[in-house]
Image (cartoon, rainbow, N blue to C red; front, side, top):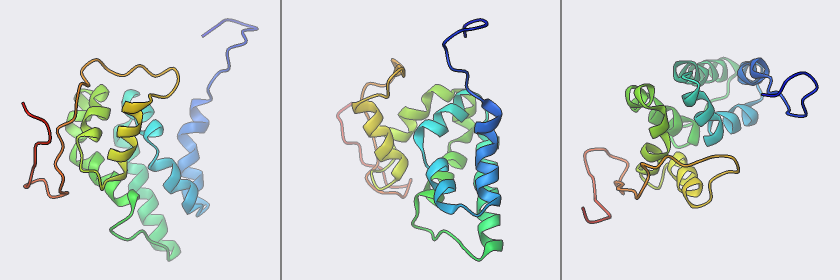
Length: 153
């Protein structure tokens, strides 16, 4: 991006990568949850092939919260988001660009599915949706054994 004297702002990647670490160690739980359950942050991590680091950030946050006496119950976005990433880590490692499609196909009661649906309706500025995304075929139950196809094939 641009040479010396360029007006293009440079992103401090180290600051972005270390923010979650410092927020976790500082017991700033709302910041940690807000960051780790943000679709844009997840997209950046997946596209940069840092998915294992992202999953580790969730684990660190859960361990630190436990030691601090705080915890997230089983119904929060944090737990759902981590389940989504772990369950789809193999596919996302092979094809990080499939993140939005996989997320959009998740049941509506998952926060990541709601955020992906919003991205599909109005993509963020400077983000180009992959051409593969055409429609969603999603289960309406969170149990992966019970699928309902909502669109004809």
